[in-house]
Amino acid sequence: MSDLRDTKVVALAGGVGGAKLADGLADLLSGNLTVIVNTADDFEHIGLSISPDIDTVTYTLAGIANPETGWGVANETWNFLAQLERLGGPVWFRLGDKDLATHILRSEELRLGRSLTRVTQDFTRALGIAAHILPMSNQPVRSFVKTEEGLMPFQEYFVGRHCNIAVSGVVLEGLQIARPTPEVSLALGDPSLGAVIFCPSNPYVSIGPIVDIPGMKDLLRTSSAPVVAVSPIIAGAAVKGPAAKMMEELGQTPTAAAVAALYRGMIDGFVIDEADGDQAEEIRNMGIAVCVAPTLMRDRNDRSKLARRCIEFAESLPRKGRS
Image (tube, rainbow, N blue to C red; front, side, top):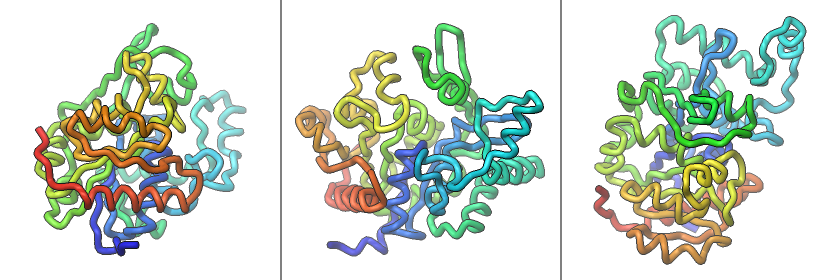
């Protein structure tokens, strides 16, 4: 088994699936891992700045995430939420007492003019995380979904409505004025970078906002490292979240091959589950190398195994031209 401790990797992540693979990568790489996290899910709630994907990745890598949900903090208490409900406040977005500390402090730091990158770095240091967790941008980008009721903020659709309404499109407000942070540009431009990995996250609302930031695709194209992605779809379904449902509603068959097609031109290789091995040739015909492996992450051992497989797959790939 090869020693990967000196390998530098940049991962793009959002959601629980992305956080799980990022955790596996962190086990192998420690401080040589940088995770660029989607912030288009960020929103303001009861006066607080909430960054759901950053928090999910942070709590997971800190070893304090709720193991049952994958989000939030383990052994949480809910006194604040109970009192908020008693006073007639909105409780559709569940804020636990421990989680609340993160949002209050982040909101204060941002109000004082500190960047989201700096605030996130301070939190990761405080929680003893060796890996580097970076927001995709310091400029706010906000995800909305198109529905028959009009544009709906993503968190209202995802948490408030439990994805129970059809989606006809995704709108990213603020995208055109957002830019990759200097820290993101530096990580992707590192000449010693060994791999860039798209985690198994929703391609529309987790990975999509990251790669669609103006300038991000240029950073990926000119990176010295092979770029590989892991399919969030296994046997026609998403392990967690609305990716498969959204694909169907947006006119795509929810398959690993369909996700590969969405990433074509950005990636050199694609990791698919053994259940989807029959799609390998279709993906190779797109000019994308394929790795077939177990991708369902039931425990920490699965996370580390998949992380190792992704890195070794990336290292086996020749540098290809991406356009």
